[in-house]
Amino acid sequence: MFKGIFTPSITILKEDGKFDFPKMEAHINHLIDNGINGILFFGSIGEFYAFTIEEKKRLVDFAVEKVNKRVPVLVGVGGTNQEEVISFGNYCRDANADGLVVISPYYFGPTEETAEIFFGKIAESVDMPIMLYNFPARTGTDLSPELVYKLAIKYKNIVSIKDTVDNISHTRKILQKVKSERPDFTVLSGFDEYYIVNRISGGDGILSGLTNVEPKLFSTLHEAYENKDFDMVEKCGKQVSTLMKLYDTTDLFVTGIKASVKAKGLDISPYTKDPAVQLTEEQYQDIKNIIEEAIDLTLV
Image (cartoon, rainbow, N blue to C red):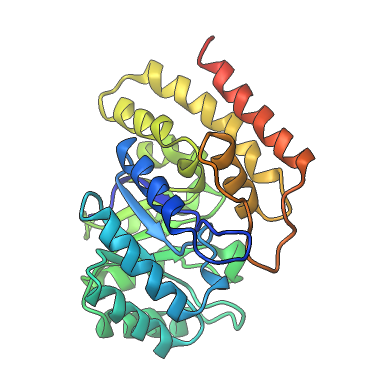
């Protein structure tokens, strides 16, 4: 159901921390016009952890209206309060979002049995497609291939996973475990540079942050892979590899991605919700240099 190139959209804010709706609309249109296959609001790069539920509802309503069914709208609803996750999920369903992304509960480190109950209760309580979100570096626990298999077999509305694990073997094992019985279950990688190995392993694409910055590059990569134009795949892959350095330019990677979108021409504030160290001029120059380095590769 969810495959190709998906963007976990940045949440564009004014300097006072309020939503910048006109710039959000411009960003949404830019992503869609450049071939992105779907957009996630309130993923990690969307600062899901920093907003109240009421603030999130406002942006969900806005996003659904502005996307206007041109691509699927996913909403990150994960959290540690299960009742709140379910309530917000049902709100997103009623707002006509296309799917939910649910991260594993963090802090208390659930066992696999507890995680299975947690995700299962959400799947039973919200009648819409659900994408699991595995990010053990942030949550402290892993969604193992065995757990993903159990959930995918038992709950038909659990249709996908974003596997943000810096180890393609983990993703490959999910693919081999699940797709033999749920071929419709899609597996996306959370690291931009894993697109090619994800696809070679039998996966379905990526849901990753640099697509905010260079959506056309990633849609070109996807089209080239689909058409077996491996010369173009190699060229795009080299650019992606260079752009990965953007994640290491700022204290919080969210700020670096926002600043990169600004450097590419959308005049936005790179302001990131607290707790965060805001962008410096030196960091912004580093970001522009990395983008120029990637652009220069297209001339080779």
